[in-house]
Image (tube, rainbow, N blue to C red; front, side, top):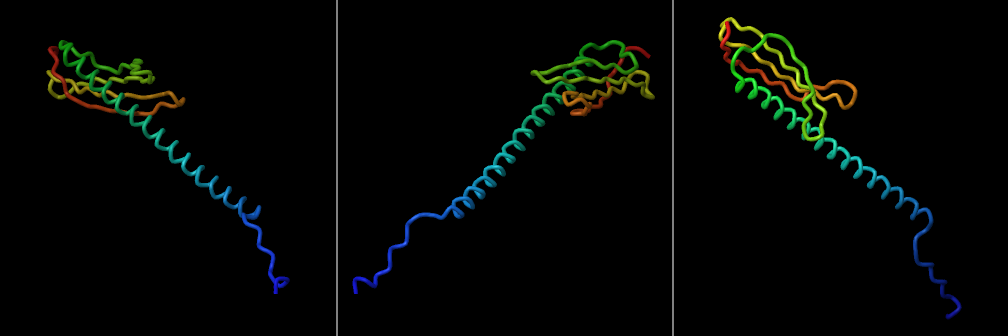
Length: 130
């Protein structure tokens, strides 16, 4: 009966099983990298929006503290913040009441070649001129 024993099967994985496992691991790692990149881009966009809102609020406060006559018209200037290239567009318009002006401040980012609006604030400020 010793001669009727079957030879033991070799232990381990076949080449095909190893290749399938490597493909599965590669797909999982690629998906994880895409998710991480998405989170990084979202964080950068959120940071830019925060800086833009703070910039717009600061510009309105500067106009409020300056007092005096608010000249009508549109003014655009660079207003970089924390290494982010921003452009502030300020529009001052007349209101039915000559003692107040409508002030609109837009903050744009043109890092990607096209201007994208990140913040827009509107307020009414008093003026000393009529």
